[in-house]
Image 1 (cartoon, rainbow, N blue to C red):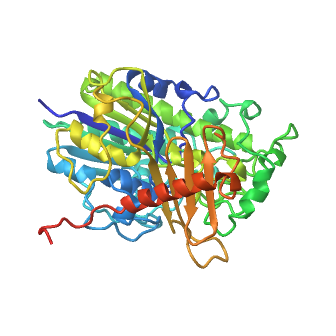
Image 2: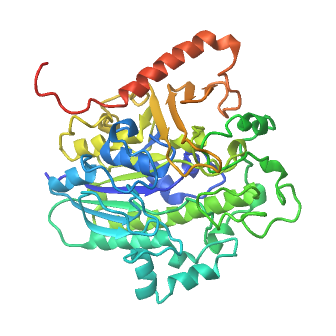
Image 3: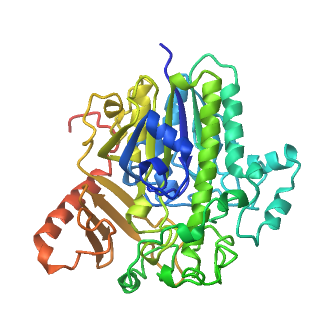
Length: 498
């Protein structure tokens, strides 16, 4: 029997709470809702790093950052000894393709140096900014197929509160490249990895998508006045927001004349990594949702394409994101060495017609590191012993309970991004979450966080210094230490008994 085709759709920086069918009444995602109805939604999925490259390295290898050592954005090369799941699948007869970003090594100013990734088709576009290295496939498509000069196109929209028209956007380019790959003649199974840059900052939804959302109807970020003082304690911790601000007091956010741009004083369109100090939080959310709705539209095109080609019934479809976005929660934007739910809790939906019961939801704790062994098991391939994730296939096929997969999840941050001004040492933080209590340790600092998400789902009450929870804190930190130590992996296989 022919193994299943595999479609992996990975967005960049999408929070878990951004799908209509999974509880967000403010966003329009009909095609993702269709996927939820046809497959299994994992409601408590966590990334292994709140930053792009180490997270992607984890779900592509099935290994934790402490094991694969790809800790930073901007690394020059990917370790030669690490084996990607796509390489394993390619060796087993899969025809593998990629459209969009890979981001396993530095992609600024160059096409990233590819590891032994297994992709026969490699349509690369790390980000749709006017920073076009030679061979940037999205820029080439704009120029050769759309008759548009990329630099001119993006210059025309640099000062607007919205991005380039939808038909010229990078997300539909990813769709087009994926459909062309799927259309190729082949006898064996295929894997297509689709990786749009959205909804990563800058928040620049196309005008027609931004206008679908009235900012004044959208919710404000999770915030209390105490957040401002609370976040000052973390001034030495790496974070793309340099200083927490009160989103309720931003210009235009309380019924006054609304800003015409995403930023006020600073523009989020200037950079994708340095968060603005002033912004209209509801307008930012409107653009963020608009970007996700464009993703939903294009994801729907892929579903329709698979159905029209008779490929849908034998295709495993995975929709996921590499990490989340703070979006103003606790006065913070973008990402960094923090582990709030909006940053580490990500969407994960898996569909496999005829194999997965439709409309099922799992409340189990799962991790993105579990995806590689899941794909290998579904393809009938034994996972290498160095993989640390646990296959989700038993849950997907109804042979394991839906409410339990593992006792805890972890996430790691090891000096991952460029240091804030004045910092001389990178931040190192680890998180363990057992489904109720979340412990966070900032190594090398007398700082930490403990949240009881059962009673404090917004993560406002840090119990770290609460004298009433000393015994709980001691237990959680011991369990935290054990979990972090276990993430290092077994190392080189032993060939003798001593």
